[in-house]
Length: 500
Image 1 (cartoon, rainbow, N blue to C red):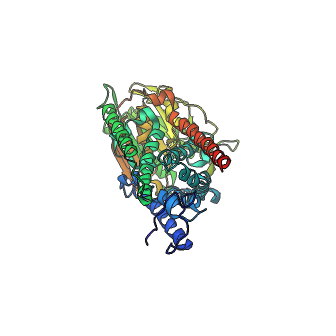
Image 2 (image 1 turned 90 degrees about the vertical axis):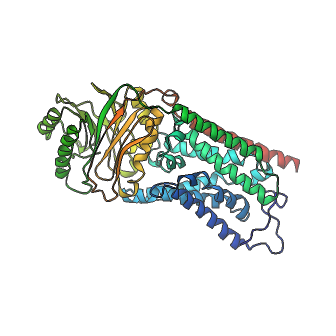
Image 3 (image 1 turned 45 degrees about the horizontal axis):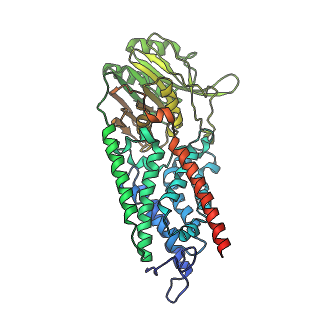
């Protein structure tokens, strides 16, 4: 279907003035919706299991063109929200459904689509009035600000960093290294700026206006500088190392007795390969290991000479649910429990040991723990690192839909904090990752019955990076920038109204 040439001179919001041969409103709306869904599809293809990662740099171009040049007047914001919903649905909906969460949370992609549509409500008019000179920056800043807001600790139910576009780049450590300086929101801003700078080019081409060559050159130079910085920040490892094991029992949906039996056998096998620290799955034991089966667990630690991160999910006498990890040492001592920092209120998952970040000193290095959903927020691993952790063990209990993606989040936590990370799951996905985000060992089994014992030697991280010191400052800057664009838009609208 041919699209008639559109120029800002047609209407103030960028919609062309009606003329003979113009597509009917319904046809234009249908094409705009199709382009929005194409963007959602392209972004989804950039992620596992498809892995077409270069698409993440162009995925949202059709969406921007649909919003600003194809959708009929008054429909641009709704089309934009639809495209965002399509992308989020590919990353969130199935995982929420399989996690057996309340139906109100399964519709999360629609809620966020509505939020994005609301934010974009007046953007088409604003960009038409400003000659599209800010499109490359304003939408990326607003998008990054919204994603950062989902990551704030008090908003556990909003998905954390799930569906952040930069997770598509998890296999490219050189590109990822600068997040140790700028955090993942700095990289998100760059990825979205590339998308919307290209969209500006397409819109200018449609309008017959001069192409934004300086803008494209500047964005290209920013990406080159980012990548060069990434190459400079790469390292080959430190002088100290530890051999770790991720224990995946392959017992999703099976009795805990089998899980315990396999975990103990696999821990012995890991010890035979020289492992010094192991992590079991989240909630693998439905009891307090300091009270039940204590003797056999202590005997296992003494026999193997290993530190073992034991995940337990149980109710106490007062009916309070504990979701905890305790590190059992070879001398039979249990560490202070670590309670899940982000307890996933959408899944009715709580812990009364929340808010402490114990780090256990071992002869091999200081060990911190996180549990499953904690991996999807940037603050928990950072707090562990600030408390001295140089290697972080993650216990998880995943679902089939996220088996190919959840462990990839640990790549980012490792680089941000310059620590090694390793993850043991009940049966879906486990991995071992070094402080530069290189995946040393991994296994993905959507059936939940993939039994695996991953063992690798990892460097002890330095635990030093600007991110550890300053946190998500780029996220806060995005929030301030988004508010600044809102104020600028309002002032611009008022000025135009006074001039008229």
